Image 1: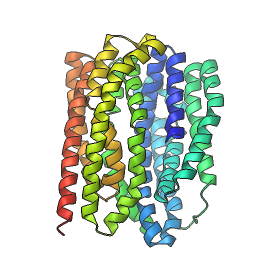
Image 2 (image 1 turned 180 degrees about the vertical axis):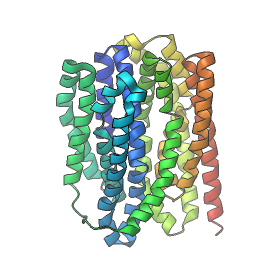
Image 3 (image 1 turned 60 degrees about the horizontal axis):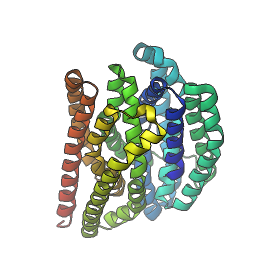
Image 4 (image 1 turned 60 degrees about the vertical axis):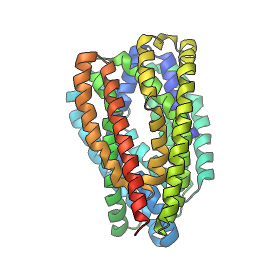
Length: 396
């Protein structure tokens, strides 16, 4: 996670430092569009794969060998379809920003495939190998990232993203050879069905997180996109330990669930929920006092009252944001209860409506108001329903 997310964060910081604020806003606006396309190209395949790899590794080695090829077929088909739609219809909506999206089109295939391999390695508990590959690729990539952004500006930053994920894809592919090129309809059906649920929930998650960037861009708040992305990227980095912990415990939680030890799963869920929220609150307080000083020193062109107001509002949901990375990977998906993630859809729709209403009445900060409201309600309800389900499972 440090190698993979770390290098993208460094690219992000270099872009913030070397690009003018408007170009930096365009950079993040373009990435938001690409990640929307990637969400449809992956649609939960990589996340579902980690769950079934852990399950097949314990129950059916033959199916395990079929996972990579059959999941890859689904991703390739979705990638081809989404890519063609973007090429033929993107220009009508994106207009002058269309060219930047074309530069990033390779990511529609590369990111889902690296995530697929990531899910396989995690399902097999090969965290050490995954860590070594990610860190080495990340360190190697630093050699060209700075040069590309310094020499070619916005275009260089986009190319750097492609190169990093291409190298990571090759490294992960070379490290996994325990598979065969054999069509397995059962594997496709099982992974495809579960990934569809995860994909729908991922769409909902996008609707109350990344959709804000698209709305800001549509209303012309390009520079404000830069403020928002700086804050959320720092939040993402600080939330990495929570996500890592969720991914590490996920195979064990899947194993406990398959053995019907629901009492142990509920106890673990309660413990991790309490601890992660407590740590999240402490981190939020540290961020509140430390981040303005850091931004003022290293990115002074982004330090102003608008930035501070946005930071204060987003800190309200940081503890829940950090906790969701742990619980989503470690429990919601791992226990087969991904259906509760579907709550992101109605709350995501609420977020869009509130954003459109608030941005007209309050300006760009209205998007943040909408996000705080929808995100908080969604996560509280999801955790409550998941706990209730785990508790009722003990009686069966």
